[in-house]
Length: 119
Image 1 (tube, rainbow, N blue to C red):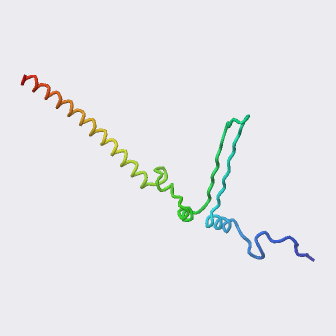
Image 2 (image 1 turned 90 degrees about the vertical axis):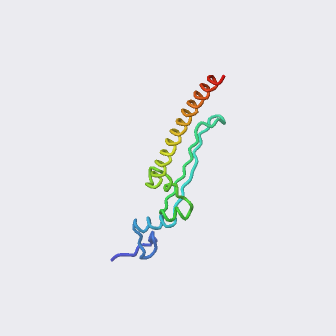
Image 3 (image 1 turned 90 degrees about the horizontal axis):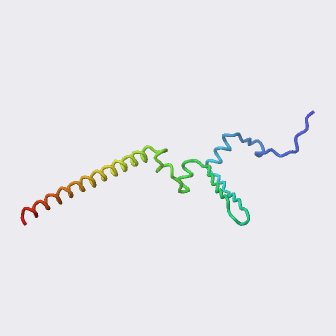
């Protein structure tokens, strides 16, 4: 003969939750863990560590306004292409600046030759 347990079921009556259910709930709602660790010695701050951890689905994170992975070149191919285009633009800008400086130097040399001939 068995006696029923008097302890309550951890996840309600008959509604057992498995790991997938728990993960789905966490990703749907999101979890934020925040904390600061400060180590002081005689009122002198030696070390401060700020910890921020957010666990959520991509959709939930975007809903909260978090989308840094979309602009990180290490994580987004479109951000990587934009980074490369910017670098190419910077290289082209430097090349034009160098060419402009060379042309100004040549113009100055030509103008100084004319003034010597004219005087």
